[in-house]
Amino acid sequence: MKKVYSTEILANAWNIKNVLEQHDIEAVIKNENLFSASGEVPFIECLPEIWVKPLDVVRAEQIITDLEGLPEEVGPDWTCAGCGESNLSNYAVCWSCESSHEITNENDLTN
Ligand SMILES: [Zn+2]
Image (cartoon, rainbow, N blue to C red; front, side, top):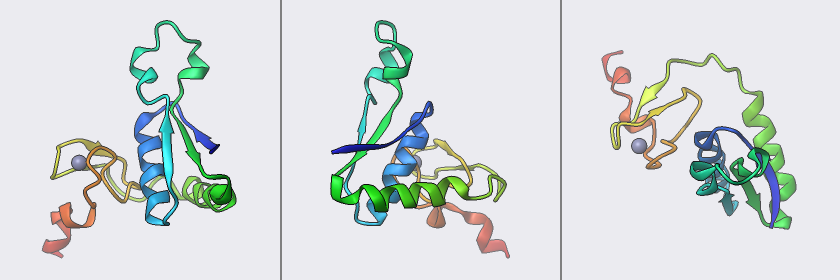
């Protein structure tokens, strides 16, 4: 496995993992647990990291680059109907429970 991404925000790591898996890329989050117990380890080693198989590295990096290149302002944050967690507008699925945004967005029904 190779590291393709690290972030200070665990929700970002979950988002990347979800998107990669939508592209049939197996992704693993490392340091997810360390992150909440960061007392004894150097901070930089506590950052959540995304690891994929060597075969998937190029594709994964391209997907992440595309994802990071998206305009930040695409809409308001949304709250997951499944678990109540709030998600950034560019998250296609809930970072916490992986519910799809589409089925939880009731605003579309009024248009
Ligand atoms: Zn959720």
